[in-house]
Length: 555
Image (cartoon, helix red, strand yellow):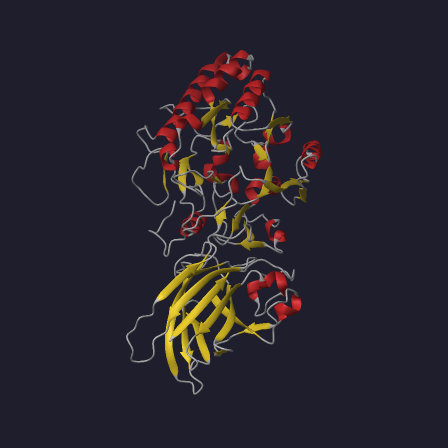
């Protein structure tokens, strides 16, 4: 006797045909599962999306209730069609070994309807047998949780189908694996849907007005949030906008907002709505001193896709002196997605120890990606050429020494050639090479931008630098929007502006615009820190979703 499970993906027509051979009691336990792939389906599995957006706008994730909330919510569930070729099988009993997966059955539905009445014609299966009509039945699969959002949940579940005769006797069974699509960070080279900025605590009205005009000419909406605290003015740090999609389908299924970790981040919660979910991955930590800003989302980014890493790798900052880095629970959550293995780089020498001060990416003229990093030696020479006081006089020696030391640390972070590791794989104590090796990144695809850093009043006895700040707008901390580079210019010498313009163009910027970001530069941040973006995920997501997590990881 044979049972066929046909899986269809969200927002897409038929995707998989999964063939399970059910064996009668006492027969050889074959449990054979064969796959006929029609649109990129994968052997023996069905891929689900965590249904945690809010299609009916009731302020709660859709999976928080026990109904399908309209036709748009129906599209976030996965159809599973069951067919048995043995006429003695009149029903099936479906179970899952995961509480995160549940079943809905149809009630008087018409298969060709695509309206809210169609969505209302589904109810929880709730352990009841599913009747088969002419050997066929259908359910909807809903997932209620992200991978690793709860302890022990690896995003995989086993669905068992048991054939039933009219008298209730079991007549064969079959298994299929269900896996949850991972949450992925979206590279900052991707197309932009929306830009976010805050107002109300800094004198940034001119900046906001100019940004609105600039984005308006590109048909990109600007969302302005009225901040209730100064922390909210740093919009990049209040949230990370990621995405989830089922492999082989058209993106995007859902935007996933990683909610703020500072205890002063009300804005991300307001974004919950259709196709936008909120992931509360961790709680704020009581950080202080030089690591007080470690959990701000400017300390988290992702590299663009490469041949070695088709979805890029998560990059976060870690203070190699204290050992503190970005929130370990978030790092573990991202590692558990098994899509973009996290790596850390050293941020110890900065005052605001964030990766977006050290590394950024542009698409490159050939679309293969270019890495941007600071060039303190070029910045030192530019400061001297411009006659800046910080580069001369009694403080000039310490200024020069600090920038030479920072330049050496950046090189060691990139190449791994220093005595102390300044980059590494999350959770692996042994050195694993520099950032370039970890990303399998061609050194020829690194462009250095002139920026000098002012050290703290007193350098350490060994010349080590901690607490450095850029003396003009850090060009690495720029915003890239649909071909346009938007870079701060506060305090920048004219020669630095020209050099950065040429560098951005060489890195794939079709247009370069310099804006006055003095209101942020005074507070030790720049354009990227001040903004956030909702971006399109890649047109294709990785085909392979591992069946189980790899080793336990952490920062």
